[in-house]
Length: 81
Image 1 (cartoon, one colour):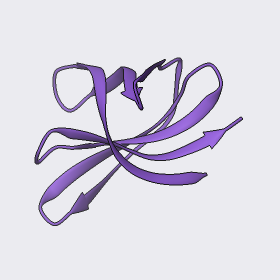
Image 2: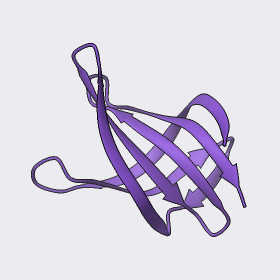
Image 3: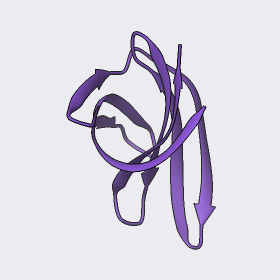
């Protein structure tokens, strides 16, 4: 998996509680529709909770992270198929 640390725009559905479901994201001026969500996990960095999502579009696997402290999304990895 190639590692990155780039801010991205994400459209997500926030359900009651802490459930978050990314629907699409924009990276390098290209929109990627999320078709699968194989993995999800949480960690903390200082006092901030970060939500990690492994998501797929039609061709690649991406790791995106939502930082709950500043409400920003970051692309941290891409595995091209």
